[in-house]
Image (cartoon, helix red, strand yellow):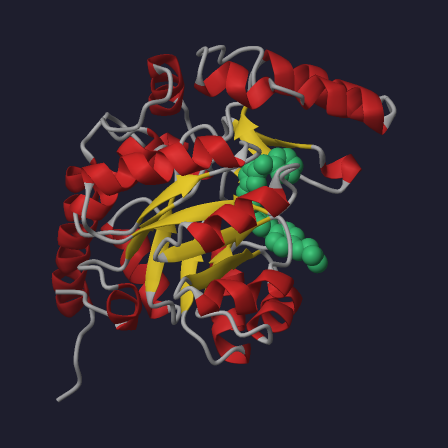
Length: 317
Ligand code: TUI
């Protein structure tokens, strides 16, 4: 049930991808998602190539199923990460925060599928031309580095201008969001925030607790004045940051405030003074579940939505 073109493209059972989140998406989480029939992704963020090599090897020990790596294109270790991914190929690479165009030929040569994340229609058009296999259209409901268009408005617009498969991301939590994404023309979804609260996710338990306790308006955007807006849970740091932005504090000082703040949260559990990158669906996350439970709840929930729609829509004779 719910096999789409994405399942054939990536050789997976369910068209659900786990977001490749820096400091969050480790080999344990990625392998658990892949074992459950989705596509697990290791988030390399700003980590050095040696760290990624170990993670890839660990994931290979944990699962024989395909998994991917997310490459954050602003990484200070970008060149060595790309060299590693040519030496030690993975099934899929997703990219964020930039244009992966110049790396596409070499990665294709080693058999890796390339799926960039885009946050606008213009970017989607540009990246589709570089010969990538699919696109992830990520709305501003997402956590982390975001654009300014919602998933609902962007996905159909991207679907209309590219001729490669589109995966929807941002604001997707359960069978309702999953089926809505398919209705918008996507062939699958990427979920990040919900997988942060997977049992197999190795982040500090206080972060999971903060997401579980979050309500609808508990995320906020910082960094818009620097040109890279980031969504995270409201806390002492976002309050301080927003005040400094309002007062026109120089960019370098703001950048300093953000430095190391993601690690402080995800590893050390400092949910007040660190950056708790998480999406708007934080409000919907109510408990810690295994990756398998998250995937099965999503696809089984979609079945229920279809039953619901069949009753809701009154057919004409
Ligand atoms: O990349 C993400 N989410 C992220 S990356 C990250 S680490 C970071 N933190 C602070 C500042 C910058 C990075 C935390 N969360 N999502 C995918 C995504 N990619 N969203 C938006 C984009 C994007 C933006 C610009 C993709 C391409 C792009 O291209 C610019 C250009 O024209 O090259």
